[in-house]
Image (tube, rainbow, N blue to C red; front, side):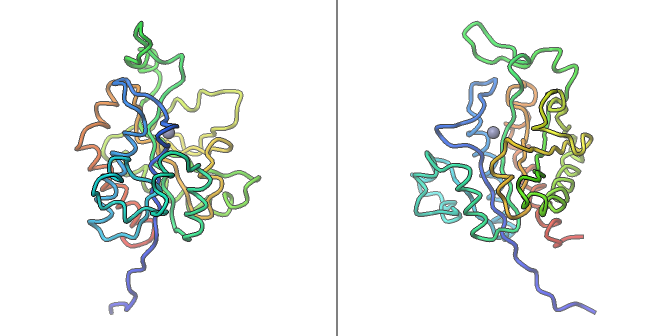
Length: 260
Ligand SMILES: [Zn+2]
């Protein structure tokens, strides 16, 4: 017998990490992290629209705001989008997601590595990571969630955030993405603790403002490593961005229990 239960709509907030002034890392092709985040969030948005999901964006590309792009209608704070680009802090992003009672918050980023692992040209530009880094660590994706007794919400949301992280990590691995393992080497600090090294899931205790202030399950995904020449090429490809978007939206559906 069929149940009369309708598909429940759950709101997901997608955050393209950083702002124009705090643009994050710079890649081995001299592109800013924010550009990679924006490109990927664009593909994710297209897929969310295609699947009819309920979602909001914390920001969109500057060019889209000035242009006619219809992603503008998905902005969490549409009246204030110019300011979002330049000034809005991470605390405001998560505060608005809390206010909208979102069921899931996903912040999209791209990773760099520590300075001593970088290979730089004479002019200072990044060429690649060092050979020994390639030999010792996998450049790939990583997923952060927060669990910090100082922020009781993080403890409340921990298991659900971990559930989403695991669903998505398994899908990444199914397409051959490797988890980055180099976050483990930062000894002497407990900002990053591995929760599941095999799946590339970490606890971020102190650094990630969006995670520790979330009142819903929240994850921060580093989609790839933009200072690694090989990985930069993969994550820049249209095929990868589309596949990432499909798998992320499948994960959102699975998380909300809309697929087996
Ligand atoms: Zn970032």
